Image (cartoon, rainbow, N blue to C red; front, side):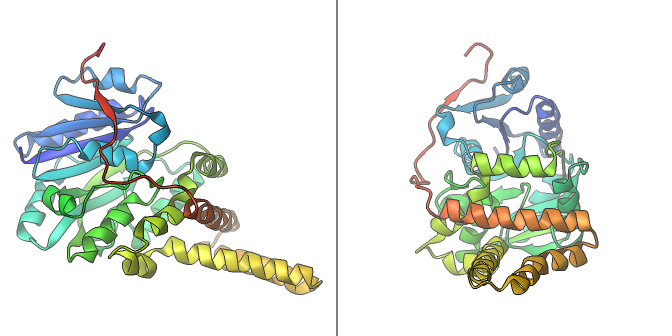
Length: 332
């Protein structure tokens, strides 16, 4: 079998059928392949909908306490029997032609471990995804060329991933694509994004600030600190220090907190007000919007707080297979 599409999902009943149908259509154009749904314990109709498709293998996480973004991706990958693996989120639709284009690219570029296409944010009603779509148009997943990660999924050489131990670190609640990219690049592999449609991403409809609070409660915000913990003492640690923007944001914000506290303790109120307003002014200018500037400042503070949380969070061995059960047929 040449290609497998892994779909990670948790309560995606609104989108899972479209995700599966898109995977089927894309695989049909490369002569077929494997579809694996990695479910992290959905309580809605996600699994029941997926069970309508007899060719879909459904593996469900046995212990919901292990849920994380990295867990979902690794759960899909550990069942792969193919040369290439595409990771798809349950709220995404894969372009029908991308597997053809991705395979052609990887077969022509033997020094690349993975390739992605353009990502289109469908839901921009939430300020979070409005900003993400805007950033992507400038420097993110809508821009072709060499990259340090494949946010929102991509097509990977299975042999290259297995050579670096595992697909995704199940300890990571976020930034698992960056961490995987760093491990691959540390041993000489390259990653690229090509100028071809990859996926449509529907994203969360939850308001930006509510989503931010949810990420703090769920552990997602701890991703930056977890990435540093995962890299400590490993060959890819220098790449993480150099390329991980969230680390720089966290250090800058923590330094801002310390400076503000020192000024307030010293009674330098005017200076404290100036320092307090400085990052807001910068972000409002950069975003050309007070609304987006305020949200960006809140996001930076969430990243810094999450960084500290993730830095002290306990880790499990990332190479140990995740406990799961096969529920590919209704009633299993």
